[in-house]
Structures are given as C-alpha cells and as structure tokens.
Amino acid sequence: MPEKRFNVAVAGATGAVGNQMISSLEERNFPVRSLKLLASSRSIGRTLKFRGDEIPVQELQKDSFKGVDIALFSAGGGTSTHFSPFAAKDGCVVIDNSSAWRMDPDIPLVVPEVNPHAVSGYKRKGIIANPNCSTIQMVVALNPVHREFRIKRIVVSTYQSVSGTGKKAIDELFDQTRAMINFLDYKREIYPHRIAFNCLPHIDVFLENGYTKEEMKMVHETRKIMEDDGIAVTATTVRVPVFFGHGESVNIETVEPISPETVREILKKAPGVKVVDDPSRNLYPLAIDAAGQDLTLVGRIRRDESVKNGINMWIVADNIRKGAATNAVQIAEILAKEYL
Ligand code: 25A
Ligand code: L14
Image (tube, rainbow, N blue to C red; front, top):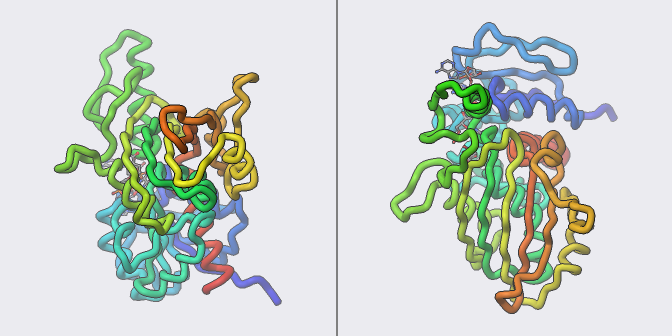
C-alpha cells in the first residue's frame, strides 16, 4: 500500500521555531504531500526552502486551512488564540507551540516520550498543545525516574538561551556583545536589561505571586504531562547570554530510596535521553553540544546529601529543536501514524 501523505501548514514559518519546524519535517522525512507556509503580512514576498523547492510565504488568514490536514503553529499566543479555532473548524489538526492552550483541560499537552497516549484527546477541540521548552527537557529526563522512584518534589533553576525569545533576541545578544567588545554604546530593545555579559532572573511576565509566568508554566505543565498533580514543583528561570540550548539544575526528592547509579542506568535506556556524565574526563552536558541535535543530555547525576532520598542533576537540550519544533513534529508523527 502506498504511504499516506499529508497536507501540512506552518504558521509563523519565518520565525526561529517556524524555520526549524520546516527543517525538522524535512530531516525526519515526515510524509508531506504539500507544505503551506504562513506568517504575518510583513513576511509576504519571502520564500523558504523545503526539500529543494522555494515555497512562497502566504499571509495567515481564517480560510488558510481548507484542505490542510495538520498545522504547526508558532506565531505567538495571540495569533494562535485567534486562528487555531478556524483551522480546527476546517478539519485541520493544530499542534500549537504557544502558551495559549496548554492548560485547557480539553486540550492535550504532549511530550511523545512521556504521554503519547494523550494525543487521542485532539478529537475534543482539534488542537494539541506543545509544552514550554524548559518543561519538555525536564520531563523527558525525570519521567523515567518518577515511574521507578515516585518523585515528591522538584526544585529547578534554569539557564535559558536567548533563542527562546525569537530572532530579534538572538540579534540583540549578538549586537550588544559586538558593541561592548568594541567599547561602543549598545541598544536594548527586547530585554529590560543588557543581556550581553549578564544574567536576568526574569523570563516572560511577572505574576501576582512574585514568580514569573515561565516559572509557573514549569509547575503546571510538569504535573499535566506527567499526569500526577501530587508532584510539588518550584522553579527559578534565568536568561543567560547563550544563543542556543537551555541548561537546568534540577533537584528531586523521591518516595523510594534512590541512588545516582540506578538513575544513570535508567536514563541510559530512556527514550530521547543521552547520559553525558564522566567528571573524570570533564564530560557533562553543554549548551554548545546540545545545540543542533534532538536528544536531551543529562549529567552531573549525584546524591543530594542533605535529604533522605535526593538526587541532583544537570539537564541540557536544544530549546528550538526538542524544546519546540522537533517535539511538535514528533506529535505530528503520532497523529499521522495512529489517528489520521
Ligand atoms: O505568545 P507566546 O506563545 O509567548 O510567543 C511569542 C513569540 O515567541 C516565539 C515566537 O517568536 C512568538 O512570536 N515563540 C513561541 N513559542 C516559542 C518557543 N517554544 C517561541 N520561541 C521559542 N520557543 P519568533 O520570532 O520566533 O517567531 C515569530 C513568528 O510568528 C510570526 N507572526 C507573528 N505575529 C503574527 C505572525 N504570523 C502571522 N500572523 C501574526 N499576527 C512571525 O512572522 C514569525 O514568523 P512575521 O512576518 O511577523 O515576522 C517575520 C520577520 O519580520 C520580523 N519582524 C517581526 N515583527 C516586526 C518585524 N519587522 C519589522 N517590524 C516588526 N514589527 C521578524 O524578526 C521576522 O524576521
Ligand atoms: O513557549 O524564552 O511558553 O522568552 C515563552 C518565552 C518559550 C520561551 C513558551 C522565551 C516560552 C520564551
């Protein structure tokens, strides 16, 4: 039987994540019959390459999704809130990378290594949400540990690269760095403070409780994806002057007795994980090694000697790939194989 092929659209195609969505579809050989590239009117006139063809970018409109089977969205929360329902109404399944739908109880929030079965929930609203980048890499590493030892509490601090904010933030770090090393004045547009040679304990907006929205996404999304509201999570999210790849210092406390050796053994077999943990040779996960590939790197696995059953680890992944575009394409693969 010939393989089934799908009409696919990417909304926000000209952005950092949208670009990678197109590349991931190509790299993973997703069965694309046709590819439609959508963005705002600012991008009209541009073309993007897919499998050697130059595809023109079209303006995202309500009727863009007629005849489209799967749409990958990464055009921000407002755009997604407005346009996803029109796509769903036309029978297109939306996989959305914004934070707009993630906590909607009728919309599944999926990391394929963790809760692939949840994809079936797309039938309720025609939308599947792609989690926050920092949450994705954390649950890929922690879920196998949770299944074995039951995690009670997670304390996480992130070291997040500027690419998460999009293309203009990548340019801002580059331009500020270049200005500073030439003793020139620098400009500040995207972040509230200089990001070059600095760290900002501030990602997304501040909320009433004193946390940022990014921190609270990690709390709520982790519980929804791991399907366990009993896990206590607390987060501090920090922007660092790195272009690609988020790092995370993660501390866990478990119900069952746990050791670094068993965690290492479990993670060596875990899907989507690569253990990089040999301090004697200075081997540990680095953003520059995580960038450009799809695995979640885990290292510095060691006992938390201050509590009964505790482990510390360091987790790094490419935030644009596994943290966004690759995860979305993996969800599309499940849809294509099992549901459409
Ligand atoms: O609300 P959220 O969920 O928090 O998401 C906010 C932003 O975060 C990024 C993404 O930015 C998104 O817009 N993002 C979301 N999830 C992410 C994740 N998990 C994530 N980033 C990382 N990890 P981005 O810059 O990567 O991508 C933006 C894309 O969205 C398109 N877009 C924006 N508004 C749209 C829209 N498309 C359709 N309708 C709308 N209303 C956007 O296309 C881009 O593809 P564009 O045409 O607006 O921009 C194309 C080029 O033009 C530059 N540009 C943007 N704004 C202006 C501009 N140039 C001049 N003036 C402007 N005002 C862009 O730099 C781009 O090169
Ligand atoms: O997907 O790094 O909710 O500025 C929004 C903020 C992605 C990262 C999301 C950042 C995030 C982004």
